[in-house]
Image 1 (cartoon, helix red, strand yellow):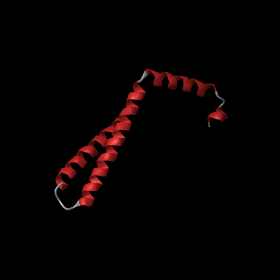
Image 2 (tube, helix red, strand yellow):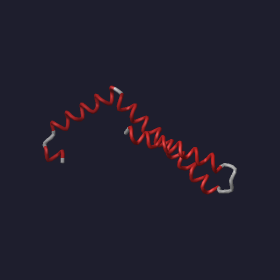
Image 3 (cartoon, rainbow, N blue to C red):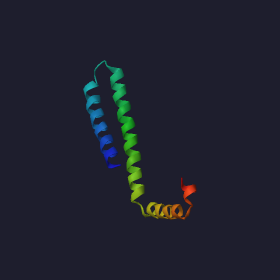
Image 4 (cartoon, one colour):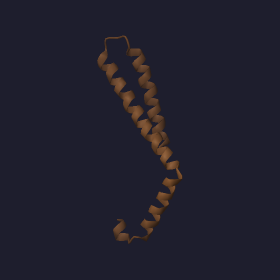
Length: 80
């Protein structure tokens, strides 16, 4: 998940560079495309950071332990 987070951050930085280059030019379609890339990457990054926070919480860990215990108690044919 950390790799995805770093990729999203890199995409945001690249989009910001391209946007600053394209501002003031007549190439509106490229500018709009890079703004959309930045927006999408920011949303992805926000979701990843939320997931990272969630996985770090004790409630999530307790839930995962409980779920693993339930999986162990099920017959194998139900697990598959």
